[in-house]
Length: 431
Image (cartoon, rainbow, N blue to C red; front, side, top):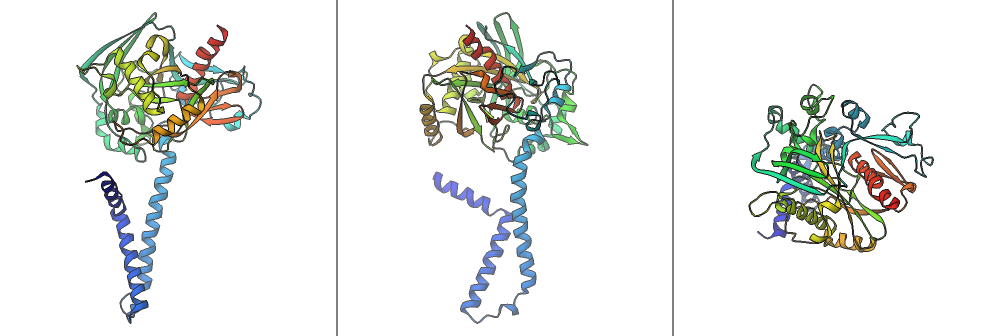
């Protein structure tokens, strides 16, 4: 069957699902009887009690509208049902963690331009430090990293704990309004940092495994008890080697143009996390279609290949292998408390292209047909924030304020961007 015809059939299939089909059939019957009355001699009242048929018709209209509205509102609140947005409360769950990332906006030139107490749910550290915030991420600075070693066990697979197996359907249904597809991912079993050397110990998991573990940590399973309450309630975060979560490796990239602007993407409303917020230039899981060699083993060189492919896939760029490396572009490793300590790597990349050139390439890529692999596009709108003057920013867990504009974000985005400003942008200015 041709693609166009197949799409039409899929659309019709959705249209004629039971709840819609009843409404459609009822509508056609009423229309047919009405027309027959107009052109013939049929007395419809002899056949039908219009009081009953009208009541049935309106029941199905109301049912149809209520289903639509239910899905619309579920889409808005879905993320907050899966993962807590009480970031202060989340940090308090893990009081024994001493590496919580902190950012102070004391240098910001716009800190007196907003009533942040009204605009933000997150609270500053104290009344005395009213512009200093804690972010629910644990960050290791890897800017000085000179070596990355990977010890990959391609035959080892993640196994869900019993509580996840027993509640799989309920946990997976938490993603009702998100677009998902399954794939094999790389699981980080352990990370060992020794001076300027990073050692990764990896195995395999699937994206769906992460969807029913890391990405539903605060979804209520029974009696108001969440997965977090059962698997990692605190007061400390389990080490990766002790964690019962899927923990697939993800990475973010902050791409800076030749106009000193960092690219952010306004995320779509069908992504599995951060709906409608602003994300980094590139946010992706480490996909095995890019990061495995011919023996299906995860290696350092293929790690770089995967990052390059994701940058090109997301933004439509043509980054080459010699433009990015672990030594020059890896800046941090962090764990996301919101997703139960999910492991993430943070990269930076400067490209010799203007904002307009990036915008053009991005939209050309959006419209490209017959892409090699199935992908879910994170968003279709870019913004460019100039980082040449970091005092124009005010950064809190749920938002980045820039030059009197407010951009809603996840704390992993705002927190890592604050890290980027402190340790890359400001470092370059001072060197």
